[in-house]
Image 1: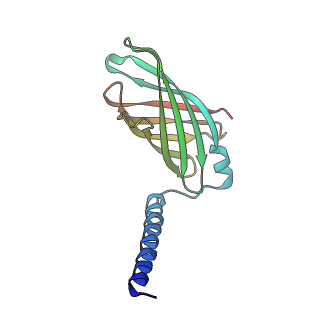
Image 2 (image 1 turned 180 degrees about the vertical axis):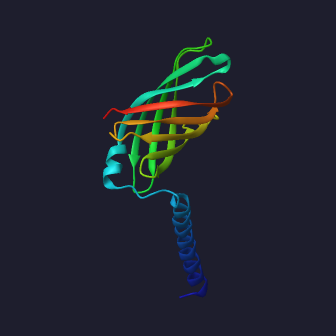
Length: 164
């Protein structure tokens, strides 16, 4: 076999192996602070959750939004899809935003998620810290992030109840 062909094959093998190793190492680093979730804990988190998020706007005005979340728990990570319905306000019609989230459980009862808008044209992202109630039916906590409509950092409360 020609030495250039052998060199090309070896180079290709190392390129593929290097890419796979990079993915595995990156995942390990991202997940090292997350706990392995039991099958029961994963079953509690999996499914649809519904509730509200509330935050205070300038002037002390309360803003309440409807939230629907679908969570899928894996061994160490939780992947989520959030749909947030904003009411009509300040002359703007009611709007909806969708977010992707990723995170994990800490100390077997806290769920920490980072979220980002699915709409790449919107600068909207943040973090959510939720506590799972002993009943397994309620997730409640706080969020902080950048609001695309308010054009500033927003924070507030969120409470979700198991829907399905």
